[in-house]
Length: 499
Image (cartoon, rainbow, N blue to C red; front, side, top):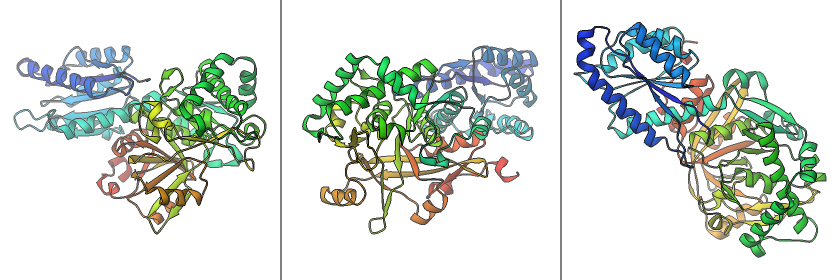
């Protein structure tokens, strides 16, 4: 999985008779944090970001400039400024001016009476903030699990943002059916996130499907589905046939080819109406893109948003990175059941099959998946709709939106629940039983959710990632809108209070 290098540097006292005595301890602390972060920032695919440690503890203007230049040459895109003792605060400027002022900064210190790192942190970080730097502060001991979790959460957030700053979103066909909340809003996106988009007509995909896709791979994929699903591919001889399923496989392979050719890091597929009425339904292709496997074995999930909902895709890419590479769900905010205080979130595409059992073994997930004929009313070209109920477990749900051209993100921790079979079938039949469903419990009221949520599409990833998302928003200048009890845990940062 893509990442950006993390820098670690420590400031100290300028007086030689002081730093010559405490530098051995400071160097030990730096090494220890580097080791901890290298171990705890492992991604699901085994990769990890590079950690670059300054060659010296900063004790002078020249060492500050030297270390800053070292980290800049190493491509560092975020920095942990460690504080273990009292330091001379002004040394932060020759360091950061050499590294680069657009690099997110985490100020991290001990809470120790003998070595007052927190005093140095507050003095130095205070200087950065009075100059307008949006920094974060964490004070605690390295052997405290909660301190380590906070640092990892901040670095996941910073990694997501600094990686996405240099990514390109592949927009196949433009936003679907006039859904303006799914539009790629170029200027605010570039200003706050840095990601740009390139729009490619869906005709390009069709021509690649016709002329460039390896038919041997199509047959291989088709056999894989046959072996995995057997009679749970519900062929009807019209909408879902072997040929319409193969057409969906071709679409998946074409998107992979064009993504590679154009350098797209993630993408969105318009689908309706051109593809769905004249080529095929995108559901199978979108599922395969978002899954961590296909018939050739494990792979990195590639975020692909249905209906080319660009702000859904951007949110999904953020969720992928902060979770260390998990697949991400895309859902319609479909139906609320007040008698159960339960949401049924479903749509015709984009549910990674990984969520059927949350397993890296596709056999375990596909054991709960059925392919249904596409609904002719909406999807005249045919193909399969993917149907399953998401496995129970903790989730983080989110969505990026705009208020008067200013970005904000709604964030809520929730849970996917498992319902008794009869109740599940009853609930699913009230929307569409041939589509994938997420039965979600939220810790906020129905009214709070509908009053604040930006649009009709909600995104989710397994686990609790609320703190990382809040950090990401605060680093970038996006306003986080946290729902439920977690909202009370957030301290509004100073730059929001004084603006």
